[in-house]
Amino acid sequence: MRRYLIIFFAVLFSIFLYFLTKYILQKLTKTDTVFISSVVSLLGFCVFILLSFLYLEGNAVDPSYLYNPPSIIDGEIKDGSFSN
Image 1: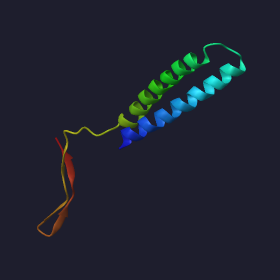
Image 2: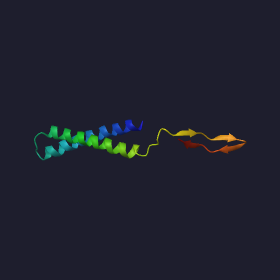
Image 3: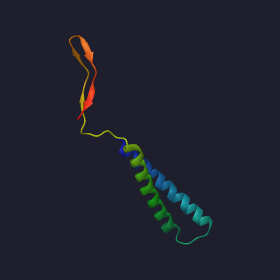
Image 4: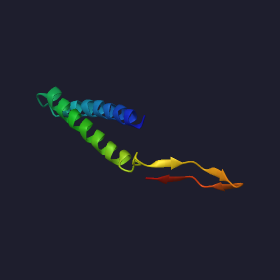
């Protein structure tokens, strides 16, 4: 679910960046505003995706670990644990 949120926010960010760049370039009366805005938007999308995945997925747990849930042994609760 987290990856879909990252992609959704990256798309929103790139759309915002596209319109912002286009607006600024039109104020400066530059030509090829659509092309330049598209390139900036695409680069912004790639950078946003890369940084988001590195930040949010960098500390993900290794999926090879096994989890032993808490259990009751001789009337006492034994803590759960992760193991290789």
